[in-house]
Image (cartoon, rainbow, N blue to C red; front, side):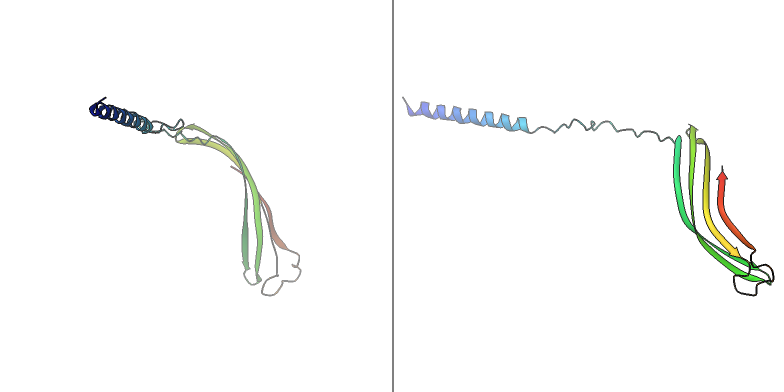
Length: 138
């Protein structure tokens, strides 16, 4: 056997090994295609928003009152205000909405006459103003 033949066999073996390795590596270098991702050429369209439906809610706040009666007194009151509301809306066109809403709030703003600065008028010690329930329907 001659030396030239062995060199040629070695070159074929190395070339085959490099070709198989390059083929294997190039098969691994492909873009990742995830199943849940849309193609890049399509832009997803956002769904249109619709205001139709029922809703419920609650509110909490505070109220302050100052009553100035000329010549009698100045009275102050404060209270926590709370309430609930509910309603239904129907959107029948892109820019049109019809609805109904009801709410009720509560506050305890009691101001007795003569409780502030100044003199209490005779006989009016039990007179006062009280705001409790504030129901509304719209």
